Amino acid sequence: CLCPSSAGNAPVFSAHPSVSGCMFTCCHGNRGGASTPAISAGSLESGALVTISRVADGEPVSVFLDPACPDLSQDFLRLEALHSSLLHALTNHNADDHRNGGAVQKLGDDLKALSGHAHNLRLAADSLKRGQGALDQRMDRLQNEQSRIIQVLSDSHSGILKLAESCSDSLLGLKRETESLGRLKSELSRNIAQTGQPVSAAVQPRDCSDVLASGVSVDGVYSVFPTHDPEGFMVYCDMSTDGGGWTVIQRREDGSMNFFRGWEAYRDGFGSTTGEHWLGLQRIYSLTRSGGYELRIDMADFDNATAFAHYSDFSVGRDSVNPEEDGYPLTVDGYSGTAGDSLLKHSGMRFTTKDRDQDQSENNCAAYYQGAWWYRNCHTSNLNGQYLRGGHASYADGVEWSSWTGWQYSLRFTEMKIRPRRPES
Ligand SMILES: [Ca+2]
Image 1 (cartoon, rainbow, N blue to C red):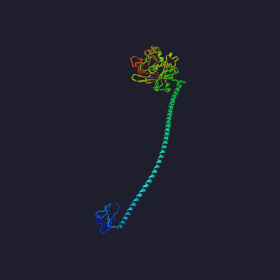
Image 2 (cartoon, protein in one colour):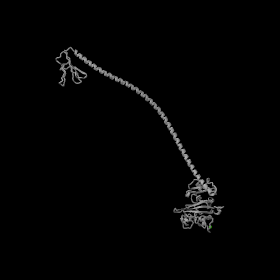
Image 3 (cartoon, helix red, strand yellow):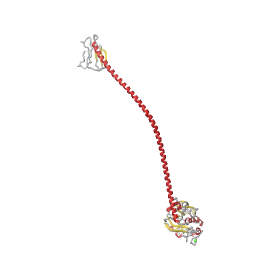
Image 4 (tube, rainbow, N blue to C red):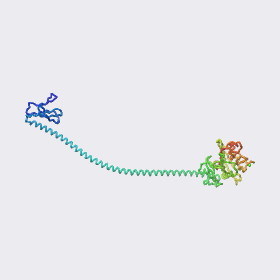
């Protein structure tokens, strides 16, 4: 038996001729490995009957069986040893399998434990789900309750707002009433101071100043009930000029109304209170016979210039027992204004119309100057004259206010208005 030569790279195994009868060669002493040996019939060249090759490292191990050698005891011993070694290896291998089996068993146990745990978790999840359902129901109930409370609060809030609004309106109304009562009180005080007797102004307005005192401050037509004409009549109230409260007694503005009229027309009045008109001597008397009235005359020409004349005292028939029979004499005093005075010379004169001559002229001034007025020996003013529209060639027969525009200019607009004299006047 020869071991591979250490000198050559390619090991050589061969039969040893000197060993006859039995030969078994192994040369794998220091070559480890446990790969499965391959057994084959020996080749003719090697002379071996059986060759066992280990192919793990490509180096065959050859076993030679000499058929002429019957004594194989040593060889069997070695084979048994080899067999034992193989068994031992197999045992170790089975032991590994056993250990693996134990691990699988342990994994199975763990899996069971995990399944149980998952079951418990599922039960817990179901319980939680049921709990959540109950919580959802309670949340719904709470939300419904909250909505109801919000609605109640909203209703209460709007109710309180309405109540506050109503209170505010009531307070405003009371304030207006208080102001109106204050004005009426001061008016009554003024009347008492002026006339020495209380007047029931709060019930029915005597004139436009009472209408104004009652809280109405819009220009327009109102009913008035003078103390001496309790049945009353309609007048136009100027609530704008110089504090308002003026009762209009004459207006010229467009020539639409014929002013060249007789006594009865001037006694009773004519025209429309909203347009050109004469209130009437009897009504002017009713308003002013108690005295204490002031007169204002507003004027305008055809160039849009304006002027006014104010008299702090004005009345008609003040001292007359029978004013018509007395001719509605004029009392006027206390001029101020921008138009100049053209009326004071007429104070004390009776009223003359074309059909009732009560002037101091040998003629009828009304007929002569185409108007109706408190003529003396005729006039310095002729506000009821013809509507001649500005400058005219004829003399003093238009709507004249001589101190402002002379005797040959007929005014575009005139408005005579009266009101009770105020304490400071
Ligand atoms: Ca005369």
